[in-house]
Length: 178
Figure 1 (cartoon, one colour):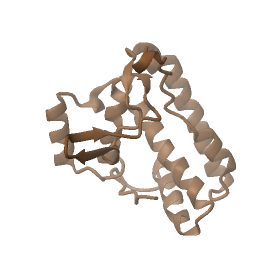
Figure 2 (cartoon, one colour; figure 1 turned 120 degrees about the vertical axis):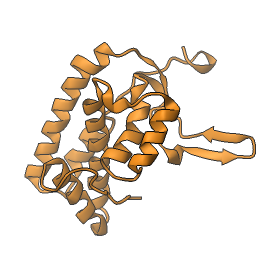
Figure 3 (spheres, rainbow, N blue to C red; figure 1 turned 135 degrees about the horizontal axis):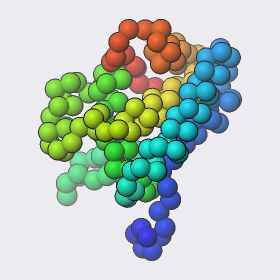
């Protein structure tokens, strides 16, 4: 049971991905199909491996620096719409992806984060699956918005190209889309 007797739902690392990819018009059909196939493979790995072998605990669900604000009373966590039960590593994967995939967190910052937290999620057995889910969410989000804003099409395609191995090594320096 969660706060005030409410039942916490289970983490869905793939929330809205299918819907976003099925309706996007900003990506070529073969790229969209490749992403849908990746989604299927990651979902299978999550459901038949990672989720089954990982302890479930209350998690934020969308932990990243933008969801922490400083107040006079101290730091406050906000945006709890994804608060659920899942492996604690889900909340840590976001920072690792920001370091390893997008370059938004430097290697030194990531090392400090791991030292302060006392754990490096990249060494966890389920890291590649949950990092893949985070990356796929970031790609599907970009593709969704690129359909409405042609200025974002280049970034959406770049993200797909990175995942498909059409660009160099990580981090790829993805540009933020708002």
